[in-house]
Image 1 (tube, rainbow, N blue to C red):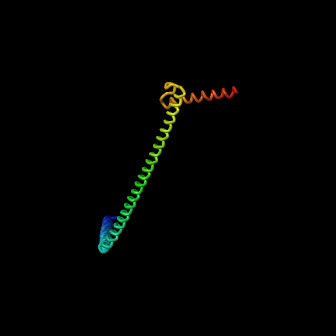
Image 2 (cartoon, rainbow, N blue to C red):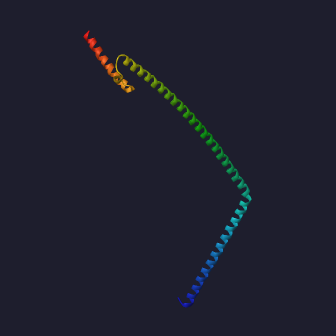
Image 3 (cartoon, rainbow, N blue to C red):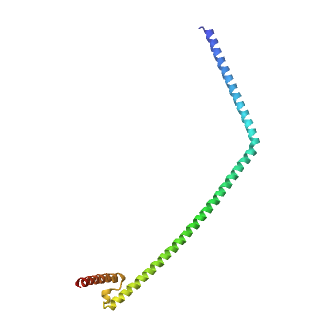
Length: 161
């Protein structure tokens, strides 16, 4: 290829490249203009719809707020009922406990009376204070020994007859 044809082809290439760039930039400009136009249309539409949208969101928020308020009231009511229920159960448990304590106190007093009676009976039979003891445990031990002694005596008497 000679120099003139080389220059021609270089110029044609440069021209084509520039046209492509121009066409490309014009196309890009067109796209941006269309995009901006679409955005403007959407923005205008939104501006017109904005009060309606705001009202819908306000109603939705109010509805949710009322719903949460109702739920809070339900939770508070439920919590109050639970607390009252637990308080009632605690009072009942305390009352039962007091009844049990009184019952045990009565049983202890009865047992003490019986022990005192046994002690008095044993002393009347002639046993000394030291032999019988003063504490319930000592008295019980002495009574066990006495019962075993009497059982042994009874078995001797029954076998001797």
